[in-house]
Image 1 (cartoon, rainbow, N blue to C red):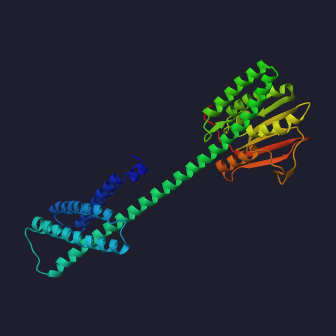
Image 2: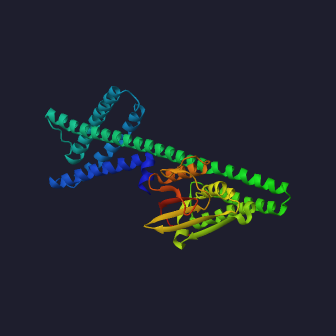
Length: 357
Protein backbone atom coordinates (compact mmCIF):
# COMPACT_ATOMS: atom_id res chain seq x y z
CA UNK A 1 0.00 0.00 0.00
CA UNK A 2 1.43 3.33 -1.02
CA UNK A 3 1.63 6.09 1.59
CA UNK A 4 -0.15 8.63 -0.65
CA UNK A 5 -3.10 6.30 -1.29
CA UNK A 6 -3.35 5.72 2.47
CA UNK A 7 -3.45 9.47 3.16
CA UNK A 8 -6.05 10.02 0.44
CA UNK A 9 -8.36 7.41 1.99
CA UNK A 10 -9.41 9.42 5.05
CA UNK A 11 -11.45 6.65 6.68
CA UNK A 12 -8.57 4.18 6.53
CA UNK A 13 -6.01 6.82 7.47
CA UNK A 14 -7.97 7.73 10.62
CA UNK A 15 -8.15 4.17 11.85
CA UNK A 16 -4.49 3.50 11.14
CA UNK A 17 -3.46 6.57 13.16
CA UNK A 18 -6.04 5.88 15.86
CA UNK A 19 -4.91 2.31 16.49
CA UNK A 20 -1.20 3.13 16.09
CA UNK A 21 -1.50 6.10 18.45
CA UNK A 22 -3.14 4.14 21.25
CA UNK A 23 -0.72 1.25 20.79
CA UNK A 24 2.05 3.82 21.21
CA UNK A 25 0.34 5.11 24.37
CA UNK A 26 0.20 1.57 25.74
CA UNK A 27 3.90 0.96 24.93
CA UNK A 28 4.95 4.16 26.72
CA UNK A 29 2.99 3.12 29.80
CA UNK A 30 4.43 -0.38 29.62
CA UNK A 31 7.98 1.00 29.56
CA UNK A 32 7.07 3.19 32.52
CA UNK A 33 5.76 0.16 34.42
CA UNK A 34 9.10 -1.60 33.91
CA UNK A 35 10.96 1.43 35.24
CA UNK A 36 8.80 1.46 38.38
CA UNK A 37 8.89 -2.35 38.63
CA UNK A 38 5.13 -2.88 38.53
CA UNK A 39 3.75 -6.40 38.63
CA UNK A 40 2.99 -8.25 35.38
CA UNK A 41 -0.76 -7.93 35.97
CA UNK A 42 -0.35 -4.19 35.39
CA UNK A 43 0.21 -4.87 31.67
CA UNK A 44 -3.39 -6.07 31.45
CA UNK A 45 -4.54 -2.83 33.05
CA UNK A 46 -2.51 -0.81 30.53
CA UNK A 47 -4.11 -2.67 27.62
CA UNK A 48 -7.61 -2.11 29.01
CA UNK A 49 -6.95 1.61 29.55
CA UNK A 50 -5.59 2.07 26.02
CA UNK A 51 -8.53 0.13 24.59
CA UNK A 52 -10.99 2.29 26.55
CA UNK A 53 -9.25 5.47 25.37
CA UNK A 54 -9.38 4.27 21.77
CA UNK A 55 -13.12 3.59 21.95
CA UNK A 56 -14.00 6.80 23.82
CA UNK A 57 -12.23 9.11 21.37
CA UNK A 58 -14.01 7.70 18.31
CA UNK A 59 -17.26 9.65 19.02
CA UNK A 60 -15.17 12.84 19.21
CA UNK A 61 -14.29 12.40 15.54
CA UNK A 62 -17.93 12.52 14.47
CA UNK A 63 -18.64 15.43 16.85
CA UNK A 64 -15.75 17.45 15.44
CA UNK A 65 -16.84 16.73 11.89
CA UNK A 66 -20.28 18.17 12.64
CA UNK A 67 -18.89 21.42 14.09
CA UNK A 68 -16.03 21.74 11.61
CA UNK A 69 -17.51 24.83 9.93
CA UNK A 70 -18.75 26.46 13.14
CA UNK A 71 -17.46 29.81 14.43
CA UNK A 72 -14.03 29.69 16.12
CA UNK A 73 -15.34 30.41 19.62
CA UNK A 74 -17.97 27.68 19.26
CA UNK A 75 -15.33 25.28 18.00
CA UNK A 76 -12.99 26.01 20.94
CA UNK A 77 -15.81 25.73 23.49
CA UNK A 78 -17.01 22.38 22.11
CA UNK A 79 -13.49 20.95 21.87
CA UNK A 80 -12.59 21.84 25.47
CA UNK A 81 -15.97 20.69 26.83
CA UNK A 82 -15.93 17.41 24.92
CA UNK A 83 -12.29 16.77 25.85
CA UNK A 84 -12.99 17.46 29.52
CA UNK A 85 -16.05 15.18 29.59
CA UNK A 86 -14.30 12.38 27.68
CA UNK A 87 -11.11 12.72 29.74
CA UNK A 88 -13.06 12.59 33.02
CA UNK A 89 -15.02 9.51 31.93
CA UNK A 90 -11.84 7.83 30.73
CA UNK A 91 -10.18 8.64 34.07
CA UNK A 92 -13.01 6.89 35.91
CA UNK A 93 -12.54 3.79 33.74
CA UNK A 94 -8.76 3.85 34.31
CA UNK A 95 -9.16 4.13 38.10
CA UNK A 96 -11.71 1.35 38.11
CA UNK A 97 -9.35 -0.94 36.14
CA UNK A 98 -6.43 -0.05 38.39
CA UNK A 99 -8.20 -0.44 41.72
CA UNK A 100 -10.32 -3.48 40.90
CA UNK A 101 -7.75 -5.50 38.92
CA UNK A 102 -4.35 -4.38 40.16
CA UNK A 103 -5.09 -3.26 43.75
CA UNK A 104 -8.03 -5.58 44.52
CA UNK A 105 -10.70 -3.00 45.49
CA UNK A 106 -8.44 -0.28 46.93
CA UNK A 107 -9.94 3.24 47.28
CA UNK A 108 -7.78 6.31 48.20
CA UNK A 109 -9.10 8.83 50.71
CA UNK A 110 -7.41 11.97 49.33
CA UNK A 111 -9.78 13.92 47.07
CA UNK A 112 -6.97 15.65 45.15
CA UNK A 113 -5.77 12.28 43.91
CA UNK A 114 -9.02 11.93 41.96
CA UNK A 115 -8.63 15.42 40.55
CA UNK A 116 -4.99 14.96 39.54
CA UNK A 117 -5.66 11.71 37.71
CA UNK A 118 -8.69 13.23 35.97
CA UNK A 119 -6.72 16.23 34.72
CA UNK A 120 -3.98 13.98 33.33
CA UNK A 121 -6.58 12.15 31.23
CA UNK A 122 -8.12 15.43 30.04
CA UNK A 123 -4.69 16.65 28.87
CA UNK A 124 -4.22 13.46 26.85
CA UNK A 125 -7.65 13.83 25.23
CA UNK A 126 -6.89 17.48 24.45
CA UNK A 127 -3.68 16.34 22.75
CA UNK A 128 -5.70 13.82 20.77
CA UNK A 129 -8.11 16.59 19.71
CA UNK A 130 -5.21 18.83 18.69
CA UNK A 131 -3.68 16.06 16.59
CA UNK A 132 -7.05 15.35 14.98
CA UNK A 133 -7.53 18.96 13.91
CA UNK A 134 -3.91 19.27 12.80
CA UNK A 135 -4.10 16.18 10.59
CA UNK A 136 -7.52 17.23 9.30
CA UNK A 137 -6.20 20.65 8.26
CA UNK A 138 -3.19 19.01 6.64
CA UNK A 139 -5.46 16.73 4.60
CA UNK A 140 -7.58 19.68 3.50
CA UNK A 141 -4.50 21.64 2.44
CA UNK A 142 -3.21 18.64 0.49
CA UNK A 143 -6.60 18.20 -1.15
CA UNK A 144 -6.73 21.87 -2.18
CA UNK A 145 -3.17 21.66 -3.44
CA UNK A 146 -4.01 18.60 -5.57
CA UNK A 147 -7.08 20.37 -6.97
CA UNK A 148 -4.98 23.41 -7.86
CA UNK A 149 -2.34 21.22 -9.52
CA UNK A 150 -5.00 19.31 -11.43
CA UNK A 151 -6.65 22.54 -12.59
CA UNK A 152 -3.26 23.91 -13.63
CA UNK A 153 -2.43 20.70 -15.52
CA UNK A 154 -5.78 20.72 -17.31
CA UNK A 155 -5.29 24.35 -18.32
CA UNK A 156 -1.75 23.53 -19.44
CA UNK A 157 -2.96 20.63 -21.60
CA UNK A 158 -5.85 22.66 -23.03
CA UNK A 159 -3.45 25.40 -24.06
CA UNK A 160 -1.10 22.94 -25.77
CA UNK A 161 -3.97 21.28 -27.63
CA UNK A 162 -5.31 24.63 -28.74
CA UNK A 163 -1.92 25.68 -30.10
CA UNK A 164 -1.39 22.38 -31.93
CA UNK A 165 -4.86 22.17 -33.44
CA UNK A 166 -4.79 25.81 -34.49
CA UNK A 167 -2.11 24.88 -37.03
CA UNK A 168 -3.89 21.99 -38.73
CA UNK A 169 -6.76 23.95 -40.36
CA UNK A 170 -4.26 26.50 -41.72
CA UNK A 171 -2.29 23.77 -43.48
CA UNK A 172 -5.45 21.92 -44.50
CA UNK A 173 -6.97 24.93 -46.28
CA UNK A 174 -3.76 25.50 -48.26
CA UNK A 175 -3.60 21.85 -49.32
CA UNK A 176 -7.27 21.67 -50.32
CA UNK A 177 -6.81 24.79 -52.41
CA UNK A 178 -3.83 23.16 -54.12
CA UNK A 179 -5.86 19.99 -54.79
CA UNK A 180 -8.68 22.11 -56.20
CA UNK A 181 -6.23 23.84 -58.52
CA UNK A 182 -4.83 20.50 -59.72
CA UNK A 183 -8.32 19.24 -60.48
CA UNK A 184 -9.16 22.42 -62.39
CA UNK A 185 -6.09 22.00 -64.62
CA UNK A 186 -6.94 18.29 -64.98
CA UNK A 187 -3.84 17.04 -63.19
CA UNK A 188 -5.87 14.19 -61.75
CA UNK A 189 -2.93 11.90 -61.03
CA UNK A 190 -1.16 14.54 -58.96
CA UNK A 191 -4.41 15.45 -57.24
CA UNK A 192 -4.98 11.80 -56.30
CA UNK A 193 -1.44 11.50 -54.91
CA UNK A 194 -1.92 14.67 -52.92
CA UNK A 195 -5.22 13.44 -51.44
CA UNK A 196 -3.60 10.11 -50.47
CA UNK A 197 -0.63 11.79 -48.77
CA UNK A 198 -2.90 14.31 -47.08
CA UNK A 199 -4.91 11.39 -45.69
CA UNK A 200 -1.75 9.77 -44.28
CA UNK A 201 -0.56 13.03 -42.76
CA UNK A 202 -3.92 13.83 -41.13
CA UNK A 203 -4.12 10.27 -39.78
CA UNK A 204 -0.75 10.83 -38.12
CA UNK A 205 -1.82 14.15 -36.59
CA UNK A 206 -5.04 12.64 -35.23
CA UNK A 207 -3.31 9.58 -33.78
CA UNK A 208 -0.59 11.64 -32.08
CA UNK A 209 -1.42 13.15 -28.71
CA UNK A 210 -0.42 16.85 -28.81
CA UNK A 211 0.52 16.64 -25.12
CA UNK A 212 2.99 13.79 -25.52
CA UNK A 213 6.45 14.04 -27.02
CA UNK A 214 7.59 11.88 -29.91
CA UNK A 215 11.04 10.73 -31.12
CA UNK A 216 12.61 13.02 -33.72
CA UNK A 217 12.75 10.11 -36.17
CA UNK A 218 8.96 9.83 -35.97
CA UNK A 219 8.66 13.60 -36.36
CA UNK A 220 10.84 13.46 -39.50
CA UNK A 221 8.57 10.77 -40.94
CA UNK A 222 5.58 13.09 -40.47
CA UNK A 223 7.51 15.97 -42.01
CA UNK A 224 8.31 13.88 -45.08
CA UNK A 225 4.58 13.16 -45.50
CA UNK A 226 3.96 16.88 -45.38
CA UNK A 227 6.83 17.68 -47.77
CA UNK A 228 5.65 15.05 -50.26
CA UNK A 229 2.32 16.86 -50.35
CA UNK A 230 4.09 20.15 -51.01
CA UNK A 231 6.32 18.56 -53.66
CA UNK A 232 3.21 17.78 -55.68
CA UNK A 233 2.62 21.53 -55.81
CA UNK A 234 6.21 22.63 -56.41
CA UNK A 235 7.67 19.57 -58.14
CA UNK A 236 11.45 20.10 -58.64
CA UNK A 237 11.30 23.62 -57.26
CA UNK A 238 11.31 22.23 -53.71
CA UNK A 239 14.43 20.47 -52.44
CA UNK A 240 14.99 19.15 -48.95
CA UNK A 241 18.32 18.46 -47.26
CA UNK A 242 18.21 16.52 -43.98
CA UNK A 243 21.25 16.13 -41.73
CA UNK A 244 20.31 14.42 -38.45
CA UNK A 245 22.66 12.42 -36.24
CA UNK A 246 21.68 8.93 -35.08
CA UNK A 247 21.62 10.05 -31.45
CA UNK A 248 19.37 13.01 -32.29
CA UNK A 249 16.85 10.68 -33.97
CA UNK A 250 16.10 9.20 -30.54
CA UNK A 251 15.46 12.61 -28.94
CA UNK A 252 11.95 13.36 -27.72
CA UNK A 253 10.28 16.61 -28.75
CA UNK A 254 6.73 17.97 -29.12
CA UNK A 255 4.88 16.45 -32.05
CA UNK A 256 4.74 18.53 -35.23
CA UNK A 257 6.87 21.26 -33.67
CA UNK A 258 8.86 21.74 -36.90
CA UNK A 259 5.99 21.54 -39.39
CA UNK A 260 4.77 25.18 -39.05
CA UNK A 261 8.36 26.43 -39.42
CA UNK A 262 8.82 24.48 -42.65
CA UNK A 263 5.38 25.61 -43.80
CA UNK A 264 6.51 29.22 -43.31
CA UNK A 265 9.67 28.56 -45.32
CA UNK A 266 7.64 27.16 -48.20
CA UNK A 267 5.06 29.92 -48.10
CA UNK A 268 7.37 32.92 -47.73
CA UNK A 269 10.56 31.62 -49.40
CA UNK A 270 10.16 28.71 -51.83
CA UNK A 271 6.84 29.90 -53.26
CA UNK A 272 8.38 33.27 -54.25
CA UNK A 273 11.42 31.78 -56.02
CA UNK A 274 10.94 31.05 -59.72
CA UNK A 275 13.82 28.59 -59.75
CA UNK A 276 12.77 27.01 -56.48
CA UNK A 277 14.77 26.65 -53.31
CA UNK A 278 16.10 24.31 -50.65
CA UNK A 279 15.02 23.67 -47.06
CA UNK A 280 17.63 22.25 -44.68
CA UNK A 281 16.82 20.37 -41.50
CA UNK A 282 19.66 19.69 -39.08
CA UNK A 283 19.71 18.10 -35.64
CA UNK A 284 22.40 17.02 -33.20
CA UNK A 285 22.89 16.40 -29.51
CA UNK A 286 25.41 18.52 -27.67
CA UNK A 287 25.97 18.95 -23.90
CA UNK A 288 22.80 16.98 -23.14
CA UNK A 289 20.71 19.30 -25.30
CA UNK A 290 18.96 18.78 -28.62
CA UNK A 291 19.94 21.39 -31.19
CA UNK A 292 17.57 21.82 -34.14
CA UNK A 293 17.99 24.04 -37.18
CA UNK A 294 15.57 24.69 -40.03
CA UNK A 295 16.77 27.00 -42.79
CA UNK A 296 15.96 28.06 -46.33
CA UNK A 297 17.75 29.94 -49.10
CA UNK A 298 14.89 32.29 -49.84
CA UNK A 299 14.85 36.11 -49.85
CA UNK A 300 14.90 36.17 -46.02
CA UNK A 301 12.98 38.55 -43.77
CA UNK A 302 13.60 41.68 -41.78
CA UNK A 303 14.67 40.88 -38.23
CA UNK A 304 15.12 42.99 -35.14
CA UNK A 305 16.60 41.51 -31.95
CA UNK A 306 15.98 38.02 -33.29
CA UNK A 307 12.28 38.72 -33.96
CA UNK A 308 10.37 39.18 -37.18
CA UNK A 309 9.59 42.84 -37.80
CA UNK A 310 6.46 41.86 -39.73
CA UNK A 311 4.57 38.88 -38.35
CA UNK A 312 4.11 36.13 -40.91
CA UNK A 313 1.14 34.03 -39.87
CA UNK A 314 0.57 32.05 -36.68
CA UNK A 315 3.15 29.28 -37.21
CA UNK A 316 6.19 30.94 -35.62
CA UNK A 317 4.19 32.45 -32.73
CA UNK A 318 2.44 29.14 -31.94
CA UNK A 319 5.71 27.21 -32.03
CA UNK A 320 7.27 29.61 -29.53
CA UNK A 321 4.19 29.43 -27.30
CA UNK A 322 4.25 25.62 -27.33
CA UNK A 323 7.93 25.56 -26.40
CA UNK A 324 7.38 28.05 -23.60
CA UNK A 325 4.42 26.10 -22.23
CA UNK A 326 6.32 22.79 -22.30
CA UNK A 327 9.80 23.89 -21.24
CA UNK A 328 9.16 27.22 -19.45
CA UNK A 329 12.59 28.93 -19.49
CA UNK A 330 14.66 25.86 -20.37
CA UNK A 331 14.66 26.35 -24.13
CA UNK A 332 15.72 28.82 -26.83
CA UNK A 333 14.10 29.85 -30.11
CA UNK A 334 16.24 32.08 -32.33
CA UNK A 335 15.57 33.53 -35.76
CA UNK A 336 18.57 34.67 -37.83
CA UNK A 337 19.65 35.39 -41.39
CA UNK A 338 20.93 32.35 -43.27
CA UNK A 339 24.13 32.28 -45.30
CA UNK A 340 24.28 33.35 -48.07
CA UNK A 341 20.55 34.11 -48.23
CA UNK A 342 17.38 33.10 -46.49
CA UNK A 343 16.18 32.65 -42.95
CA UNK A 344 16.97 30.01 -40.36
CA UNK A 345 15.43 28.97 -37.05
CA UNK A 346 17.51 27.46 -34.25
CA UNK A 347 15.78 25.62 -31.42
CA UNK A 348 17.43 24.29 -28.28
CA UNK A 349 15.57 22.00 -25.86
CA UNK A 350 16.72 19.52 -23.17
CA UNK A 351 17.74 16.15 -24.58
CA UNK A 352 15.29 13.41 -23.58
CA UNK A 353 16.06 10.02 -25.03
CA UNK A 354 13.21 7.83 -26.22
CA UNK A 355 13.19 4.32 -24.78
CA UNK A 356 12.31 2.80 -28.13
CA UNK A 357 10.79 3.80 -31.42
